[in-house]
Image (cartoon, rainbow, N blue to C red; front, side, top):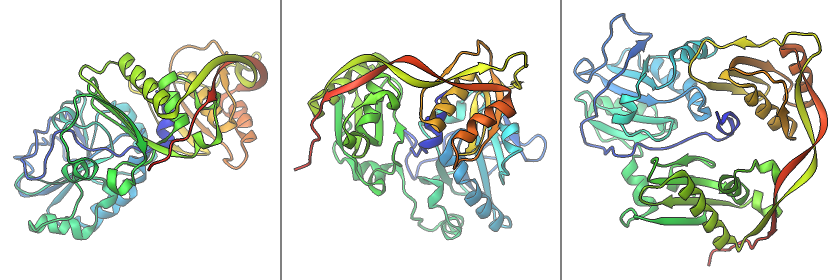
Length: 389
């Protein structure tokens, strides 16, 4: 699970095939929480109600950040014929655990088989679909754009100003979608692309996009190196770019190859790999003490929280090592020899990284020990920062 990346990079993406003005695709949820027993969600049972359908996940920071906003809207409009439905394809145990930490107003729809996500072509989240009382889509966008006035317009059947896929696509490109593309360009503004910095999107096997990312991040995608082990010019961590890779039958290996070649051509890039003795931390057991690790009861993995207060569900200790690496800004190696997945909660002072060492020791009964280890690095020998005409 790429837990740390998801903590830092809120997703913002659109449905792949939906259009404003078309009937909404079928709803196929396996369970509905916070509703009357036996509630069945179909457009027929929802008829007469406008619907704010929110596709989200516990691991999506952008989604979690919008929960308070959606709760306030739901409560302000509780006497109106509008139904707020938060849809997720995660394991029910993960959702029940999450709801102990966060209150979510409205109904929570569980899509165990991902059928509804597939019907709506969801490729990223948070994603909000506005559906009127007749079951017709009236808006596709981000929850941050929602307001009481906008939803009341949805209820009245009047024109609403809510961004949708077609508008954003037209802002980016008026030409047909290419069959093949390997492109790196200066990052376009968020208000044009509709994607937050660091977001990734795409349809598996067809295309991949990264929005507002640095050259160092693109290098990490191409060469599978953590950014902390990439030695490159300072501007490689500052200037931002958009990346697009499109190809028929886009396999993972072809995607990597195309990103690598695009990097080399765009930046006149030359690199090599080398092993260096590196200051690291090693995650180890405490002598004669049983680690304080809670065996998971969930099949699905997730993680949420904020710096200084993180919870992870059904993760290996490698995820804890990844979190530690982010906090301590050094590589962290898991040498506990402990297999399996666990539910982990840890709190520390975000202003004092060293407090993380004490938190691991006191809360999890594990140790983080300084050490020297050989680590592989990607070294940029030369690169030219391109400039737009």
